[in-house]
Amino acid sequence: MDAEQLKQLERKDTAHIADILSQFNTKNADLLTFDSFHTDNLWHDLWLAIFGILDDATLQSVHAQCLNTVRILTRDEFSLQTHFVEQELGTLLSLARINASSNEDGAQPQLDDAQAEVIAEALKCLCNLVYQSADCRRQCLRQHSLDVLVKRLGTASSTRYPCTLEYYDMKLLFLLTALEPTARTRLQIDLNGLTYMTKWLDDKLADSATAASEEQLNIICELLKVMFTVTSAPDKSPNEYEIQSLHLTGVLRELLLRFGRLSTERERAIVTHAINLLTNISDSCLTELTLKCNSADTETESVKECTVASGTTEPQPASKCCALCFEKRNVRSLAVLLDYLRGGLAQQETEASSHELLSPVLTVLVKCARSDRTMRHYLRKEILPPLKDVSKRPEIGNELRNHLCRFLTLPAMILRDLAAELLFILCKEDVGRMIKYTGYGNAAGLFAKRGVLDCRRIEGADYSSDSEDSDTEEYKQQQQSFNPVLGCVEQPKRNPLEGMTEEQKEYEALQLVNLLEKLRKDGIVQPALIDKDGKPQPLEHILQLQEELPQQQLEQKRKT
Image 1 (cartoon, rainbow, N blue to C red):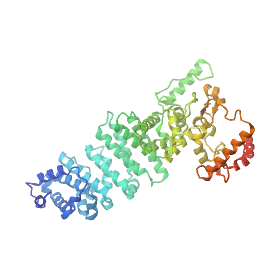
Image 2 (image 1 turned 120 degrees about the vertical axis):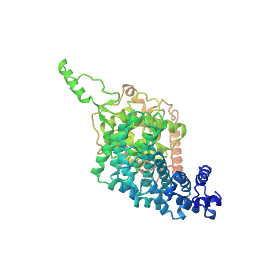
Image 3 (image 1 turned 60 degrees about the vertical axis):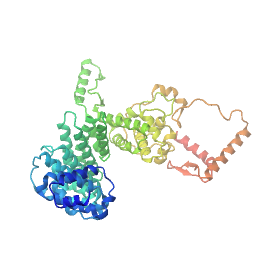
């Protein structure tokens, strides 16, 4: 923009404003570097000229173009930090109708297309400013912008509020709550925002019986992001928060059922944000993910009638009341979580995606398995079905168990620990069962952390004792050849000591001791014994293993 054009904007030359702004906006639509605007104070002069036009009510016809220019200028973080923009921010809040005076108005008036466009452009500018400047965030809070946004949220379902404005309202609400801790507290405590957002989400799911539009899906994604930031550090009392969480979990269950097909990228994004939000929900509320099947009670009565009619004491088998009925509960939402996990694992194998994408769904599965017996039974059936083929190592294959066993030896600590925790809970924290499904070698890290390297039972593990025997006939037939360290049947191998004299065996043993001692001195390995707490205790010399061997053998005999 040359000096003459800038002067025309400053003079508010109505004959040229629209052409100048259109040319500037088209040329700089993708501009991210503003070095040329820092010379001769061009950025600040243009900024003041544009807001001079925005403050003039007689020039409303070009306000949308002006706001487009402002949106481009707000990408320049350096200029925003070096210039005082409080007055201009107030103008944007007024144009977006989220300032203090807007909060005093009654119901939202119906908007025409031109008004909606101005509000949308003003909200875009505010999103940039809130993202770039902490001062702008604090001024938005002082102007009660958060209150107006929540008020809009509460009335959006009852008024014809454009989807585009809903989307940018959510975008701004997310940026405020994500970047300003005081905004999260005010939204949750003073404005009871979580209740409004849960109701809004519930209404959206109830209203849109047909396929939701792309705009609505984007709005739902933004709202879930806001709810995640608000629930990350709940400030309400535990009882009050749990009541809200129960309702929220029920709505998230419907969300998973609605978009659980994962047929499009947008549906997958919604499920991803829903899973992220579930990681913030307390364990006791996750039982809402499964519902009692509609005909469960009817089934029970019909079984009793069949028993009486047949004159037998054993109940007759009844058919399932729904496609995903498990122990008289609908577990379809858990099936969606497992499908999402399978999709994430397949994507990780082909695209080497970040492990962080899988940790939220594993966290939710751990919480579900720990909080409810029915959910644990279903997850165990899907992840750890009864063993039949034990010819391959547990980490080899493409089933969920195989993937999780591979995670047990990953250097990524978060994913490794979550996979170990999930498998251990599904095994009811039984060391022997864990060894059978994963192999002692894969689970050694977990055992060391839990203090059960000596295969002792964990004290205080609260699990039911009525589960079925997991040993299949195929497993029992090969149990004698089962190698617990590898987690599979090991093929017979030739004894390497066969044909050696006693002197040769002793020589090889001493060579092995010397090699181990060299590795210890070089810091490559650290030999250890299992202490009385079930955890590894480092040794000073490799020969201490031989000294402690008789005592360990005696203790092992006492345990067996």
